[in-house]
Amino acid sequence: MTIQDNFRTAMRNYIYSVSVMSMMDTDGTPYAITVSSVTSISMEPPSLLVCINKSARVHDSIKEGSDLCINLLTKDQEEISNTCSSESQFDKRFDDKNWNMQNIPYLENAQANIFCKVDKLISYHTHSIVIAHVLDASSKESMNTLVYANGKYA
Image (cartoon, rainbow, N blue to C red; front, side):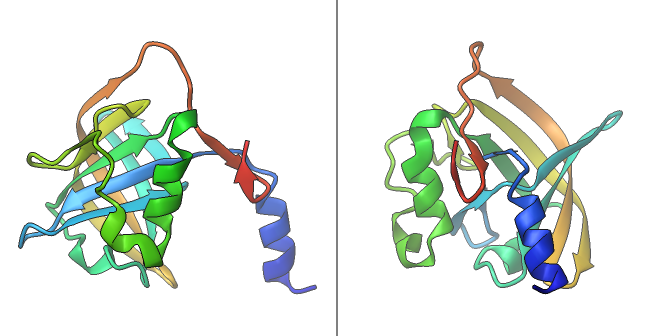
Protein backbone atom coordinates (compact mmCIF):
# COMPACT_ATOMS: atom_id res chain seq x y z
CA MET A 1 0.00 0.00 0.00
CA THR A 2 1.09 3.58 -0.67
CA ILE A 3 1.33 6.36 1.89
CA GLN A 4 -1.81 7.85 0.28
CA ASP A 5 -3.70 4.55 0.83
CA ASN A 6 -2.52 4.33 4.45
CA PHE A 7 -3.38 7.99 5.09
CA ARG A 8 -6.85 7.61 3.50
CA THR A 9 -7.52 4.56 5.69
CA ALA A 10 -6.38 6.39 8.82
CA MET A 11 -8.51 9.46 8.00
CA ARG A 12 -11.62 7.28 7.59
CA ASN A 13 -11.46 6.80 11.38
CA TYR A 14 -12.21 10.48 11.94
CA ILE A 15 -15.81 11.51 12.49
CA TYR A 16 -16.71 14.60 10.46
CA SER A 17 -19.72 16.86 10.67
CA VAL A 18 -21.24 17.38 7.22
CA SER A 19 -21.81 20.88 5.89
CA VAL A 20 -22.73 22.52 2.63
CA MET A 21 -20.87 25.68 1.69
CA SER A 22 -23.09 27.98 -0.33
CA MET A 23 -22.41 31.25 -2.11
CA MET A 24 -23.38 33.44 -5.04
CA ASP A 25 -20.70 34.42 -7.54
CA THR A 26 -20.36 37.95 -8.93
CA ASP A 27 -22.73 37.26 -11.84
CA GLY A 28 -25.45 35.88 -9.52
CA THR A 29 -24.86 32.16 -10.10
CA PRO A 30 -25.53 30.21 -6.88
CA TYR A 31 -23.16 27.45 -5.78
CA ALA A 32 -23.41 24.78 -3.10
CA ILE A 33 -20.84 22.10 -2.32
CA THR A 34 -20.71 19.47 0.41
CA VAL A 35 -17.69 19.95 2.67
CA SER A 36 -16.38 18.05 5.67
CA SER A 37 -13.19 20.03 6.19
CA VAL A 38 -14.57 22.98 8.19
CA THR A 39 -12.58 24.06 11.24
CA SER A 40 -12.89 26.98 13.60
CA ILE A 41 -9.72 29.04 13.85
CA SER A 42 -10.35 31.62 16.56
CA MET A 43 -12.92 33.70 18.41
CA GLU A 44 -10.88 36.90 18.07
CA PRO A 45 -11.68 37.49 15.33
CA PRO A 46 -14.33 34.82 14.84
CA SER A 47 -13.00 32.83 11.89
CA LEU A 48 -12.98 29.44 10.27
CA LEU A 49 -11.34 27.59 7.44
CA VAL A 50 -12.76 25.33 4.79
CA CYS A 51 -10.83 23.38 2.17
CA ILE A 52 -12.07 23.29 -1.43
CA ASN A 53 -10.71 21.04 -4.16
CA LYS A 54 -9.39 23.05 -7.10
CA SER A 55 -11.35 20.82 -9.48
CA ALA A 56 -14.69 21.80 -7.87
CA ARG A 57 -16.91 23.95 -10.07
CA VAL A 58 -17.25 26.57 -7.30
CA HIS A 59 -13.49 26.92 -6.77
CA ASP A 60 -12.75 29.74 -9.20
CA SER A 61 -15.70 31.80 -7.93
CA ILE A 62 -14.23 32.02 -4.43
CA LYS A 63 -12.31 35.28 -4.08
CA GLU A 64 -11.07 37.36 -1.18
CA GLY A 65 -14.08 39.42 -0.11
CA SER A 66 -16.63 36.81 -1.30
CA ASP A 67 -19.57 36.08 0.99
CA LEU A 68 -20.42 32.48 1.81
CA CYS A 69 -22.42 30.40 4.26
CA ILE A 70 -21.47 27.19 5.98
CA ASN A 71 -24.70 25.23 6.47
CA LEU A 72 -24.18 22.52 9.10
CA LEU A 73 -26.57 19.73 8.09
CA THR A 74 -28.98 17.75 10.25
CA LYS A 75 -29.35 13.97 10.20
CA ASP A 76 -32.37 14.21 7.88
CA GLN A 77 -30.40 16.13 5.22
CA GLU A 78 -28.36 13.28 3.72
CA GLU A 79 -30.07 13.86 0.35
CA ILE A 80 -28.87 17.48 0.25
CA SER A 81 -25.36 16.33 1.11
CA ASN A 82 -25.44 13.74 -1.66
CA THR A 83 -26.86 16.18 -4.21
CA CYS A 84 -24.30 18.88 -3.39
CA SER A 85 -21.42 16.41 -3.66
CA SER A 86 -22.48 14.98 -7.03
CA GLU A 87 -21.31 16.71 -10.21
CA SER A 88 -24.09 14.93 -12.16
CA GLN A 89 -26.69 16.59 -9.90
CA PHE A 90 -25.19 20.09 -10.08
CA ASP A 91 -28.38 21.60 -11.55
CA LYS A 92 -30.51 20.14 -8.71
CA ARG A 93 -28.56 21.59 -5.79
CA PHE A 94 -31.08 24.33 -5.07
CA ASP A 95 -34.26 22.29 -5.64
CA ASP A 96 -34.89 21.85 -1.90
CA LYS A 97 -37.66 24.20 -0.69
CA ASN A 98 -35.62 25.18 2.40
CA TRP A 99 -33.06 27.23 0.47
CA ASN A 100 -33.30 30.96 1.14
CA MET A 101 -31.87 32.52 -2.03
CA GLN A 102 -31.79 36.16 -0.93
CA ASN A 103 -28.24 37.52 -0.75
CA ILE A 104 -26.11 34.56 0.39
CA PRO A 105 -28.00 31.29 -0.22
CA TYR A 106 -28.54 29.32 2.99
CA LEU A 107 -30.59 26.37 4.23
CA GLU A 108 -33.22 27.65 6.64
CA ASN A 109 -33.61 24.22 8.27
CA ALA A 110 -29.89 23.50 8.80
CA GLN A 111 -28.47 22.64 12.23
CA ALA A 112 -26.49 25.89 12.00
CA ASN A 113 -25.71 28.65 9.51
CA ILE A 114 -22.39 30.47 9.67
CA PHE A 115 -22.22 33.54 7.42
CA CYS A 116 -18.72 34.58 6.43
CA LYS A 117 -16.58 36.81 4.25
CA VAL A 118 -13.49 35.28 2.65
CA ASP A 119 -10.41 36.85 4.19
CA LYS A 120 -7.61 34.81 2.62
CA LEU A 121 -7.05 32.01 0.11
CA ILE A 122 -4.05 29.73 0.40
CA SER A 123 -3.21 27.36 -2.43
CA TYR A 124 -2.01 23.96 -1.30
CA HIS A 125 -1.49 21.36 -4.03
CA THR A 126 -4.96 20.01 -5.04
CA HIS A 127 -6.92 22.26 -2.67
CA SER A 128 -7.38 25.85 -1.61
CA ILE A 129 -7.63 26.68 2.07
CA VAL A 130 -10.31 29.33 2.48
CA ILE A 131 -9.93 31.43 5.62
CA ALA A 132 -13.14 33.26 6.38
CA HIS A 133 -14.16 35.92 8.87
CA VAL A 134 -17.46 35.02 10.57
CA LEU A 135 -20.04 37.80 10.23
CA ASP A 136 -23.03 36.07 11.84
CA ALA A 137 -24.11 32.63 13.02
CA SER A 138 -27.29 30.93 14.14
CA SER A 139 -28.07 27.40 15.30
CA LYS A 140 -30.89 25.16 16.44
CA GLU A 141 -31.23 24.57 20.18
CA SER A 142 -31.20 20.78 19.99
CA MET A 143 -28.26 18.98 18.39
CA ASN A 144 -29.08 16.71 15.46
CA THR A 145 -25.92 17.00 13.33
CA LEU A 146 -25.26 14.79 10.30
CA VAL A 147 -21.90 13.06 10.67
CA TYR A 148 -19.74 11.02 8.32
CA ALA A 149 -17.20 8.33 9.18
CA ASN A 150 -15.63 5.32 7.46
CA GLY A 151 -17.11 6.25 4.08
CA LYS A 152 -20.74 6.54 5.21
CA TYR A 153 -23.15 8.62 7.24
CA ALA A 154 -23.10 7.65 10.90
